[in-house]
Structure formats: structure tokens, C-alpha cells
Length: 154
Image (tube, rainbow, N blue to C red; front, side, top):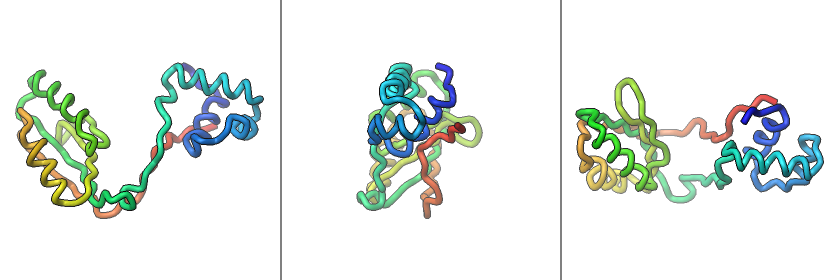
């Protein structure tokens, strides 16, 4: 789907407040409510709008430890890579996982309650996965920026 300036404006507004009414959204971007609704629906159906979500403050919700965990595999056997990826999808404490080039094969953003929970995550899960050769943890000391909004230019 090719996005025009109105689509980008809709997406920028929805990223700021996905609970905005269709009437309010239409007024902000200068469309009728029905035209705005059709565009939002097209964005949803095309997959550009993947889902709507609530952003929770991790610390206030009791998740005090965040780690950037770098995982290297000993060999890039297809079965080990596929199993690693399948298993990662089953663990909700892994908020993001990227297959990367460079110093590690995978970069994980892991959020847990505390250091004890992180140690259990490593011992009971990561270290038991076949093919894992090295794990490096970078504990987050302070979050400087956490945004989910893409930088749409309208």
C-alpha cells in the first residue's frame, strides 16, 4: 500500500492516541468522518496498522530489570536457528528479538521483575537451548528514550 500524506497524518495521530474517536481524527486531518473511517479500515486491512495496544510503564508495573541480551549460536544449523526462534516466541519476557549481523546472532530485549527472575530466565531457558554458545547481558541502568511511534512526515 502506498501511503499518501493523509494516510501518514492518520497514522501519526493514531500512534499518539489510538482511542481517539473517528470524528476527532477526521477533524484533525481535515476529512469527513466516513472518508477517514474508510482510510483507517484500508490501513488495517492492508496490515499497515498491525494492532492497537496500550503502552505500560514497566517500572510502575513491577518490572524493575531490563536487559539487552546478546546470544550467539555455536553453529548456524537450520534446526538450531529455527528452534531458537520458535522458543523465543513462547517467552513473554522477551519483548523484542532481532536476528543480527555483527557481534551476536540475536539481540533480545528482556524485561523481568528483578535480577533473580533474570537469572531464572537465563538458567531455565536460554542456557538450555541447543546451539547456544555465548550469552552477554547488558543490564539497562537508565532508559533515556522509549518510543514506539514511527516518524511519519506529513
